[in-house]
Image (cartoon, rainbow, N blue to C red; front, side, top):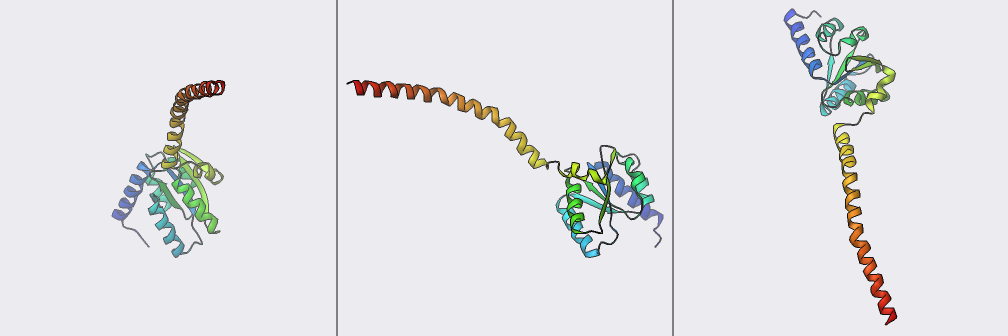
Length: 176
């Protein structure tokens, strides 16, 4: 079905805007996946702030010009779904990796982060990145450790003095 020029321009603008604000993109071949499964995938993507785009390859190539995802140009072959991570760089990778485990027909083609195209075999590298919440938790734990150690050390001084006084008291009581 032919798409009008105005519609093509709108699609290109929308994908360009999404790509401009995205942290990473994962490309996958969705042939053989049912529409019900795709609907479920889209619902999961919305929940994780991942934007899924199914766009004709020539429009996608135009849309990614001027963004850090120009490197995916050569990977845009055949039916392709683009999953843009908007807040967490690993969100799209985790989402599509889990979906590909469940659906054999769904195949990850590649991914791009920071202007670098990586193969599908690198999906774990991106999927294992901690979420923002996990990263902040790790940072808090690392920051809190020296403070906790200092508090314990400072607490040991009065404890040792108290134990020494109690030992002297017990010794005097036994002597008396």
